[in-house]
Amino acid sequence: MPTPPHELTNQLVAAVTAKDAKRVKALLAQGADPNAQSPEGLPLLCVAVAGFDDESAEALTERGADADRELADGTTPLVRAVDSGSPALVDALIGDDPRRRLPEVVQHRLLSLARHWMETGAEEELRRRTGASGAAVHRHVRDGRYSDVEEFCLGGLTCRAGHSAILTFLEERFGIMTPVLELAARAAPYSIPEKTQVNWFAASTALAVRRSPQDRFALNALRNHPDPVHRILLAGVMWSRNFSVQVGRLNQSGDTGQDAEFLAAWALEEPDGLVLSWVLEAFAEHEHPDQEAIGLRYADHPDPRVRRRIPDLFSRDVPPTDAVAVALLALSRDPVPDVRWATASELAAHFTPAFREALLDLVNDSDCDVRAQAAIALGASNDRTSAVTDALVSVLDHGEQLVRLEIVYALARRDNPRTDDAWERVGELPPGFGEVDGGGQVDHRILGYWDYQRRHRSSDSHAD
Image 1 (tube, rainbow, N blue to C red):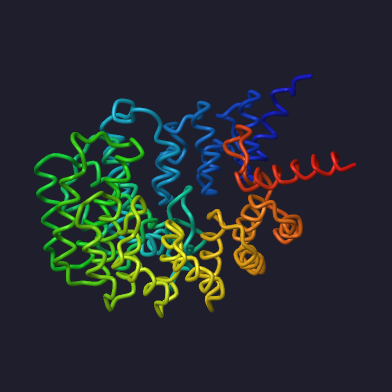
Image 2: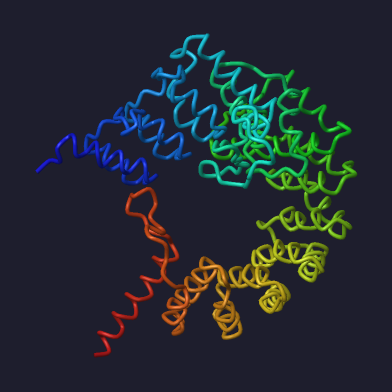
């Protein structure tokens, strides 16, 4: 018997309030009203915005919730999303073709609001709105699936400091070509940038799709900028551009040879270690005849952030030269764990006897993450000797559940009798773990263990 409409609405209100996005999607699929209101008389879209629940907000919007509905206080759900400082929420509510859908006066209001927050600062604007004194409580949170942002709480209000990203995003959607240097200036305050920092990410990805000669000239000029952060941004843009080409998000005429040549020349001249590490990371994503030579040039660089990037510059498609083999073995003994960690997977690419011994040594490393990376690299090989399987088992005490699952998969591939005991060491996996978009696909490591069980159940039944 179908659920009555009023009951569906009650359940939807409860699900949105609880931030249960999976339940929200299921109820909307059953016919629940996306424009339903909360007991306080607010559209459920506003409840999702207030809870920073971008998944529920996206589900409601896709099912027809009105993000442009004017409320009693003169705002709309979309205005509130911009106010929230969460780019993920704005993305969830913006809808299709906002440049045509929204009047220019509304577009201007949204842009002005985002710019005001960006220029004032999240904490200062909260202080202005609430009249509260003192410092705000702040923390770093995940915004959407892939980005991180600071969240501030003061005087009973909470916002996220993603307004720079929101402004950049809205400008793109409204067809505004923001100057390269202005976008660079928005990223510059993040002096220790990370690719997942939402404001940095927004500027980098916006610049990555700028392909005009004028834009390329302005971007390339950042290579000589006196501020290292601007040079890091350029390296990040070039990494993002190549990534977008690879995944088909960006259609690029010709190949990426021009970028590769630019990065090769830059790598030979960049004096700052941190900047150079970013340049080498972007350079490693291209194919260039000088990659090995540049990698060897910097294999003993004094900055470990540079040395960490060296293994990626050596080709996995051809056997290593003697010089590369010597460099990799030296990097596997580097005093900095992060460098040893980065070297482990490269050692497994060719698995020479010397590389095998180096990986076995790394499984006994003092750093638990290096041990795990070396074991995973060994597990991906076809070596079934007891030395390798014993090394794999020795890592089952690692604190990360996914590392223990990798070991199970490696043992299952080898039909090792310790596979079931290893599976017990994994522990209970999170609900829904390994399911891919509800399409019935399961994590390959779990499938590997199931295949192991089927093979051994079959052999046991034949033995009986």
